[in-house]
Length: 165
Image 1 (cartoon, rainbow, N blue to C red):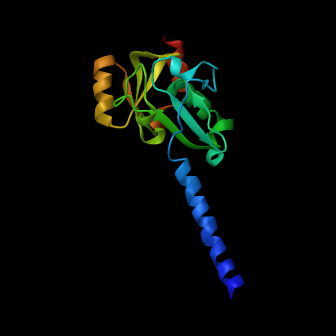
Image 2 (image 1 turned 90 degrees about the horizontal axis):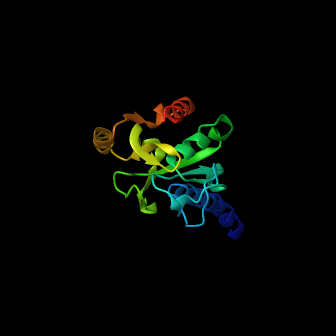
Image 3 (image 1 turned 90 degrees about the vertical axis):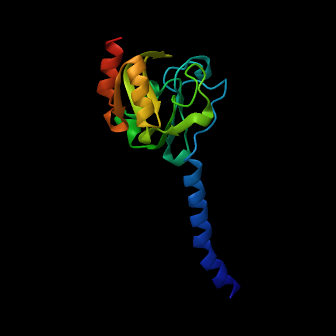
């Protein structure tokens, strides 16, 4: 009877551990003063503007980026895109542009973005993320740029932005 009960509990234990793995990737990790951008190697916290993180293979790998622009440049590459489990960006509607706080990370897929703004980030042109459409529109009215959804951000768009600035 004990063996049968143990066998019946194994799937439940596995299901709980799978739910824990899903919960762990729903929150961005802390960016420390020693973290370097996965794309360019710069110290992440040393520069202004929204940062980004990518979760690869359900949390086995978590590259961090000095800008949301660098995060998109990495995450949208075909060889990386299929491995991405989650993406996070700073909501600059609720955090300081010069020193964004980790508590302001949001799901990048649910964010609104301002592209073509006069505000600059570490690598030049910013892709400014917001959790609300109203905040993105207000930012665009003040600093210029177009309000876009996650699906609107492409490698082609990022290439044009970089060449125009």
